[in-house]
Image 1 (cartoon, one colour):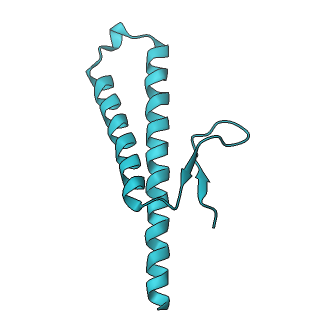
Image 2 (image 1 turned 135 degrees about the horizontal axis):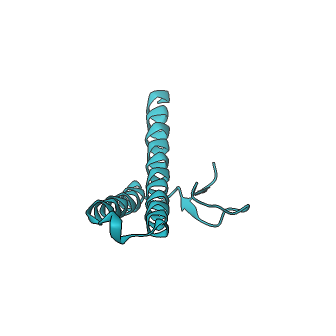
Image 3 (image 1 turned 135 degrees about the vertical axis):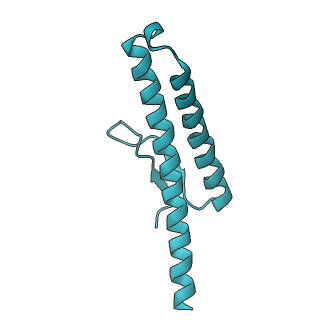
Length: 94
């Protein structure tokens, strides 16, 4: 198993951003929470905006930023789930 997994939010042919999979689970958790909460706060700000005072590009920028944050957070949660699944499989084999 490789120690790095590319983030799905990479939009390039060759991935640039990776999660390091062998860090403590707490680090993956903190990474995920930071991004999920930032996306939540961004969404909250969007709900407080008056649509009449925004242009289409503003909404696109908010949506793009929220997507990137949510996708990165979900990637970290998936990595955590993989670690827990690996641990369970190892425990069952013992």
